[in-house]
Amino acid sequence: MVTLVQVVVSGLLLGGVYALLAGGLTLIFGVMRVINLAHGEFLMLGAYASFFLFVRLGLNPILSLLISMPLMFGVGWIAQRLLISRVVRAPLLTSLLLTYGVSLALTGGAQATFTNDFRSVPFLSGALNIGEVAFSVPRLVACVTALVLTGAAQFFLARTRWGKALRATAQSADVALACGIDIDRARMIAFGIATALAGAAGTLTSFLYTVYPEMGKTFMLKAFAVIVLGGMGSFPGAFLGALVLGVIESTASYVTTTQIAEAVIYITLLAMLLLRPQGFFGLKEA
Amino acid sequence: MMEPDQPVDPILSVDRVTRRFGGVIAVNSVSFGIAPGTVTGLIGPNGSGKSTLFRLISGEIPTNTGEIRLRGTAITHKPASVINRLGLSRTFQLSRLYPQMTAIENLVAVTRAPAREASARANDSLAFVGLSPVADEFAANLSYGQQKLLEFARVLMNDPDVILLDEPFAGVNPVMEERLCTHIHALRERGKTFLITDHEIKLIMALCSRLIVLDHGELLADGDPAVIRADPRVIDAYFGT
Image 1 (tube, rainbow over the protein chains, first blue to last red):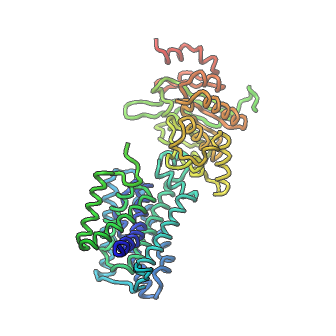
Image 2: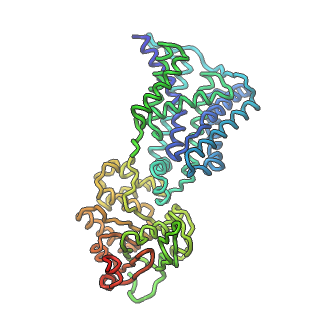
Image 3: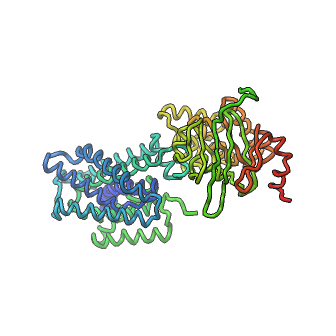
C-alpha cells in the first residue's frame, strides 16, 4: 500500500511540471488554433538559461525564473509578432510546418552554440519523509513552483481583463474583433505567456533531468499527450491531464520499465483519442 | 432632441459602397446617411444584402469601392476592433456570445475600462437589461431571449455612439421583444443612434423613424415608414408580382 502511495505521489509531483509545459501549449492552441511544435525548444532554451545562470553566476534556478521568464516572454512576443502572426489564419498544416521549422532552427542553433554535451544543474537532492512516504526534494520543489506558476496563469486568465480578452479571443476571434478586442495584441500576450511557461518548465526540468539541445522533443510528446487527455485548448484540462499522465507514467515505470512506461503513455493517448477525442474538458466538435 | 427640419451632419454615412463575392454583387453602390440620435430600420427580403452591409460597416469585411464614415472619419478599411473603438458596435443575427464565460465575464472581456470600473460598468449593463440575477450563469445556460439581451448589454459596454442590431427580435418571445424595444427607446433618448435590421416588419415600423429598403444589393427605397409601407416597389420586392 505504501509503495502504491509512493508511486502516485511521485507521479503527481512529475505531473505538476508537465502541467506547466502543457498549459502554455494548450493556451496557444486555444487562442490561435496553432499547434506550436517549437514549444519544447522554448523549454530547452529555458533550461539552458537556468543552467548558465547557475554555472556562471551561481544563481539559484528558482530565483533565475525572475530573469528567464520575462526573457522568454519577450522571445514569445517577438516570435508571434514576426512569425506566427503570418500563419494564424492559414490552414493548420502551414503553422505546423512553420513551427516545425522554428523547432529545427532552435535545436540546430543550440547544438552549434552549446554543443551536444549533456549538462546538469546540481541543485537540491535528497528526500523528505512524511510517514513512510518519501518525497524527492527536487521534484517537490519543482512541483510546488510549477503549481504556483500554473495557478498564477490561471488567475490571470480567469480574473484579469486581458485574461478574459484572451479567453474571448479563444472562443471566437471574429466576435472578439467586432467587440473591440485587439486580438493581435491578445495573441502576442498569449504566445508570450505560453513561451514564458515553457521556459519555466525548462528551468524546473534542468535540475530534474539532463540539459541537452534535443531535450525539448521528449517533453513535447508528453505535453501533447497531456493536452489530448485534458482537451485541446482547455487550461484546467491540461492541468488535470498532466497529473493523470504523471501518475500513469510513474505507475507504469514501477510496474514495468521506464521504456515500457513511455509506450504506456502513448497507448493511453491512443485510447483517449478513440474513446473521448475531446479529452476531459474539451468541447465535442459539432 | 434635434429640430425635425434642421439639417444635421450624419453620424454614419455610407457612400456608393459596393461589395462583390466572385461574380455576385452583394451590395451595389448603396448610399445613405444616418442622423445622430435616431432609430433607422434596414429592411429587405432574404439575400438583399442587409447582413453584408452590416459586415461592411462594422469592418468585418472590406468594401470593393465606396466609402463609409463615422462622425466624418473614414472607417472604410479600418479593422473591426478600431471601428469599435471609434464608437460603433454591433450584435449578430445569431447570438455570438462566449458560451464558456459567465454573463458578467462576457461583458468584462470586451471593455477597455480599468478592471474596477469594468466590473461596475458590467453590473450596470446587466441591471439595465434585467439580467442581474443571472450574472454568474454561463452564457450557454441562458435562454435564447436572455442571450439576445446579454449580447445587447455587451454592445453597451464601450459606450458606442452607433449601434447596429442584426435581427434582434428573431426567436425572441413577445415579453423580451417589448423589453428590447424599451431599452432601444431609452438609449435613443440618451442620444444613441441605431441601425436595425429585422424581418419583424411590424416591430420595425413601430420602432423606427425611417426605413431603408434593400433589394438585390441595391437601395430600393428610403424614407418614412408609413410611406415605405405603401411603396409598390417595396411590396413587389417582398411579395413578388
